[in-house]
Length: 244
Ligand code: 13P
Image (cartoon, rainbow, N blue to C red; front, side, top):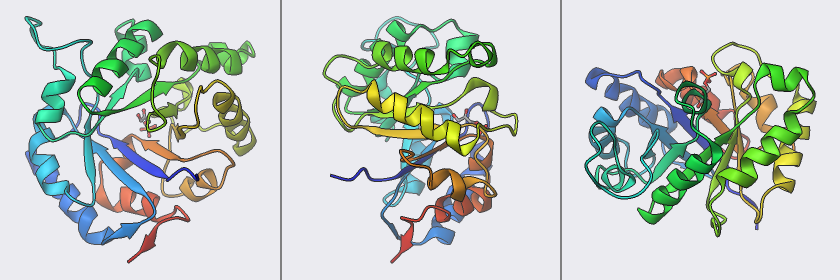
């Protein structure tokens, strides 16, 4: 079965209530799209409101969750809480958490399992640093992160996002041939066929060429997902974005 394209926006720690208007504007400019799944991951403070505004064409997700279930963990958020707020997805293992908070792939696998147990689909992020790339370790690092971050028995609905750390928020991207090579290697590391997204400086100007790369099932978009016009242009650049 062919893999349905997915384009997800990660708002990171940006967004106030006034920015919910971007979701309404996005819906208005896209109309009803067939052929692609669209997800927005706003900050947790906006999740419930975003879920209401986005439905049914656009789904929402969290950006992180804690391992396990509810408990006395001040400041944390459980996958079950995200689901209760209207999320159906959850990003885990973003490099900003791996790097900024020392999150290991073992921890990321625990978070992905917590997301799955709460009925959320995890988007598991992997990607090499610039040093690892320069050392020729990209395939090794990405393959290992995938193997170690996927919980045992993860279903085919699980999503991997390949995000080279050095491409995030920098305006830099790998060449299309490099993206194809890493996506092929990532697929080799998967226990079952899953969607593999590309992330890192995806913009309206480069989305179409990235979407045409063999093995790229969509994108995880940071900065360019914050503005409806840019995110809509990226989504419409996908060849599967047929308006109804
Ligand atoms: P940018 O699109 O801003 O480079 O961010 C990518 C990213 O980290 C998405 O999770």
